[in-house]
Length: 216
Ligand code: AMP
Image (tube, rainbow, N blue to C red):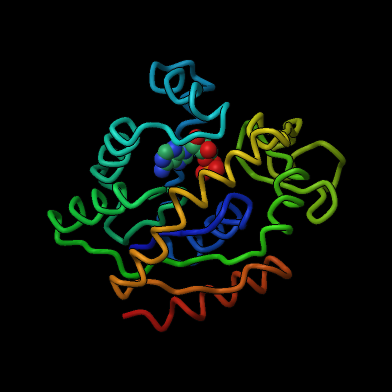
């Protein structure tokens, strides 16, 4: 299964991606996670990306597309992949289509997680993330067993710099201006599947799996 996840920041792409990747036995490729790992390792890519991430802006396409092409050339994608956070604009969607066409491995679907905008702000501002394993929690809706500590690896949770109120507003503007048009792009390609992404996490996963099982 070759899949992209589409949806606003805070729609739950990262959470659903983990479950869907495990269900289909495919790697979860999150461009945000790759940038954050580079940032943690102080690599030149991480330092470049930080300039944009801290402001809620997109990292330039030249940087992002090359990084994704490298990732898609690694040898672990024979069962497919799940891309999360990429593409983020129509130009990236076109690059992805061309890269996959060259390999003769087109996408099977673009799964849109649809959530109201008020709900998005609540989710993002209460989100707490594990800087070690990237798992996310929520101060009200998805509390860890021990306050402030990651259930999976016991690392202290943090609020991502870009989940702070000023940056959230800009990320949502960037989403509306640059990312939302990819929904029409994938609808025109006949690849779009939209599911509602409010309610319990496991029910959203179940409806995603049910919708994807109908994909040829
Ligand atoms: P995310 O974890 O997907 O919300 O991504 C966090 C930040 O990383 C975004 O706000 C962007 O600054 C950057 N980023 C992630 N994916 C992309 C992408 N496909 N294109 C450009 N910037 C990206």
